[in-house]
Image (cartoon, rainbow, N blue to C red; front, top):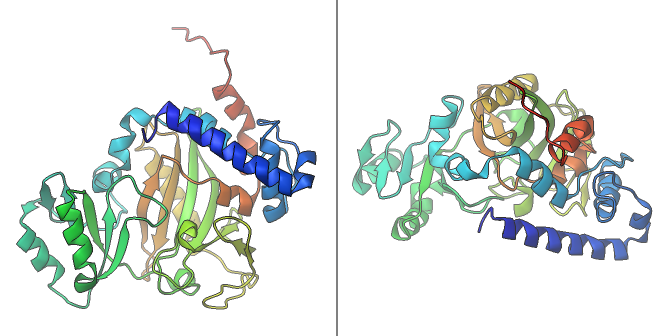
Length: 343
């Protein structure tokens, strides 16, 4: 029932209960207001105002976002196909990280889409014993779960388990990222999470954050990493947060880099344009969260995109009420009065 109405109803009940408890612990939250979720949304407003420092009643509660924005804008009937990492190359056409191995159903494909044997796969992965790979479960995972990084000897057991369990997976080469990204945490691929939205046929850039590891191999805030927001030029904010938004970082705890030292995401304008351009290929999905990075040669790559249960908290917690400019549109898609189509 991954994307069923039942799951979303249960999620809404649990999330509202969790934040009501938050409200009881933070009495000041009852004085906050939230335009679209007047009763429970005030608790999200309180938390986001504390972290972003921006006072507003135009924050989206997680429940409203997932059920009334993402749930309205994206077509979940075809989401299974778009969510499968093994089809990313087919969908996007370019600017993806090369897939050395793509295991789908009972077949293993090489980077040219040719069916190969397990032994041929091993030969490809052992051609250079020093090379590191990224092994990813193809669908149904997130937050760094289902990702293993290392040389063939280090990821071999993961591959064997995935084959035994008949789970689809992809294997990509580990890319070496741009210094301006790697400097924060060199052991992980520190990625840019960019959100774009189609509104009346036009694709808009909504918000972006930089996710970085904290001494580990993955950057996901939900896996112990750090998220930090930025302005619309790619200049980083002066502080970042953990996944729960209850711990602030003014310096990176691993590299000790001061976030206030005027850091910029390299090729930021090009990254945003690429995300907006590639969004045009996802015609049935109007709200997309992109994970992108820049390698040491300045090449921008799309690591993956997310159309299901994409996180909103680290956007609003870092950057404020990012959907405020689109409130009229959000109200429109949730209106009970449907516009007439006149031919």
